[in-house]
Length: 99
Image 1 (tube, rainbow, N blue to C red):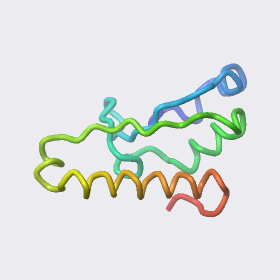
Image 2: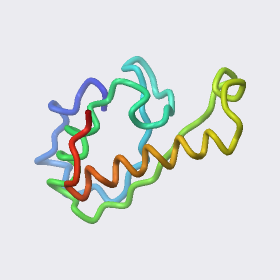
Image 3: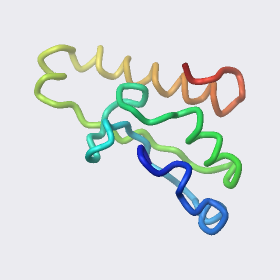
């Protein structure tokens, strides 16, 4: 979704979305980064998703690299994941814009 949020055929497929796995990337490949650690415009993406599927099930699907494992303990990494989910939930509830 990094490069095609606006070009995705939302009118055709948006209402068919039932569940999604969420992760971020830098636009080249599926990196499974924690949301807000790549280049996806989460405010724009969540707005598009929720326009068509207000009750969609969302799952965080991230993967830590060796670099990440050397930088954070498992608990610290899980806390970063939880923080990103909290930010996404705030967007879903309309409490904040993604900055």
